[in-house]
Image (cartoon, rainbow, N blue to C red; front, side, top):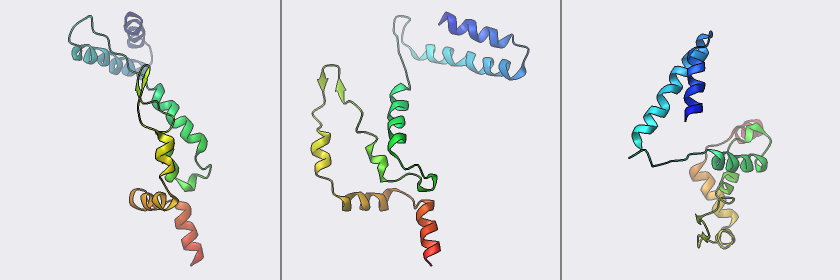
Length: 128
């Protein structure tokens, strides 16, 4: 925490207005978070690594065509996540769950939950 505050103080003393403004904005965050803790012994860690990793895996598998937008491929997002706590994994069997899903289910889900992407709109328009 001391390193964080020291870095913010360096930002506040910068000769650049944008850096000073960023430092002022960042200086409020640790104070707000400290107020949420019940005492000085309590520690709370937060990281976006899990979310970034999950979306990174999704981006590797999605279509490279930007006109496709979000497709039913978005349903793979929960697959690489580990459910449960520590050495006690969840009883959810993703493999068994996936074996019960058919292409018709994916099509119905897509129609009910996703908007029409630009590639489909273009194909319909050009087809007449």
